[in-house]
Length: 92
Image 1: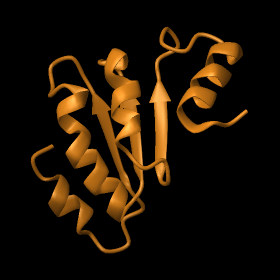
Image 2: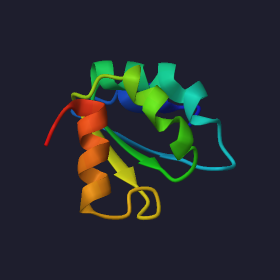
Image 3: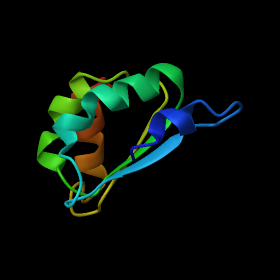
């Protein structure tokens, strides 16, 4: 993770992928880095740990360019998925 700015500087890069894990920094501490990435590129973010802080993090991040992956025990069915999307992005 310490080289993310160097990777982000690669010309023609389609985006970055990051997994939030239990043994890494907390999601809330990653928000400034995630925002900087999204200001310059796209981001695939897999929230394997720290789902309870995701709502707070998403309020601080642009939605454009963000591809969010969640575990199936975090959003268990289509109804929960629709509720999650509506709560965070106003979609249906």
